[in-house]
Image (cartoon, one colour):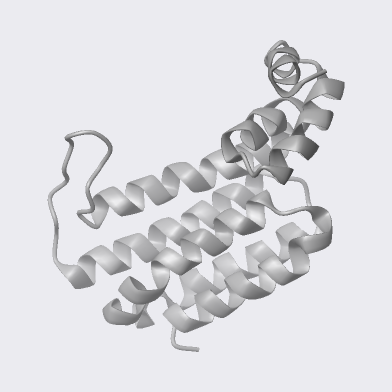
Length: 167
């Protein structure tokens, strides 16, 4: 089957097609198709991704970044904004962990989430502004990575969390 046929079968709930399409989508890379495959073949990972994505969109909105389309949000004070964004990122990690199965991967994410929550009052707004985009990309890469790449992706995210928390 070609790529489009596999997509159609995946949308119809075919787990075998989703597994094959996932391999092809990662090679392209096609993030939206990877997420489609997860929703069928790996629903736990898909829910973890969605929890993270929704929380990061909320964090961007609170920070006054431009929304999709013509929507704009109101910017609130930088210190308050960063504290709220840090809380949201921590809660996003916690939500992602709680929706996923207990594995070493999830255990390390839980530890990072707890660390963010514990040290959130020590966040330097300038450091946060500098490192949050990288942290977001790191967590996205972590959630999209193959099992064999998880340790390296986790190390990257832990480094970024430490930079934001000045640890």
